[in-house]
Length: 336
Ligand code: CP
Image 1 (tube, rainbow, N blue to C red):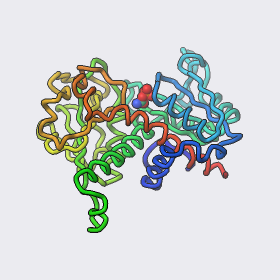
Image 2 (spheres, protein in one colour; image 1 turned 135 degrees about the vertical axis):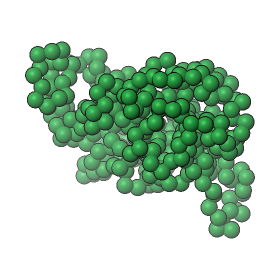
Image 3 (cartoon, protein in one colour; image 1 turned 45 degrees about the vertical axis):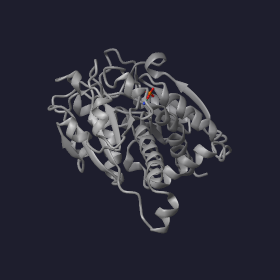
């Protein structure tokens, strides 16, 4: 693998998921693979889970890791080609990225969208400039429109849990003897209220991965005016009726996003869209997912988050194994 900025960079999802689960059972089985290789984790924006899980994953593979909070400690970077740099930006990415490519064998980069310039955000200007000028593999730690490490984690968690859930209803021995595959889970991505205008990237990315995987009945529900980019949602059923969407759901993924068409706005912020226990009554004992951080009692009620149905901690724990599976592919691509 030469870069990981979208699900299109992962040629074989099942292989990545299988590797991730192997690392979950045996974290240090490839502890010498990354020996002598250094990863730079560059943050233009805040993070807890991505930063720590990626560092742990790289160290589990024997890599050296340096975290650099570019947005806080570095020079303000310019990303536009041919910019006249007479404003607040101090260093062009064209100058900075090749230097980072000399210091590091692999770069991980977090760059949020502006939510002001849709064209720049959806062209993935920032991360693509690092890909173009650094000369080393780039791993997205969440970019303007996508969050592939999160989505891979989500898919790992869904498969892990659905397998357990299927086995609970149908013993594995019987299932195998009958040569039957577990049925497809129903996965619902539901918009939730929030106090701030948030990027669409987690919702875009989750939709992209679930559609590409094809192993689920996939429904997206949101209020009017919160349509996502159809490049990512194509293949999913989309409805503005949250109650109808939740019927018989096996997994409910909760996430806020701002408007895509009239870019980066909050239109309706109806508190009735918060996910509560009452709403889950019509589901198939659905498991609840969220990428975190979460605004309690705004996006999801305490009752749901603190219930046995919540997978949020398992999901965040799986971030290590998803990152480790991806970094192995990147290391193999370096010629190990
Ligand atoms: N889910 C996620 O990316 O969390 P952080 O922003 O804390 O990295």
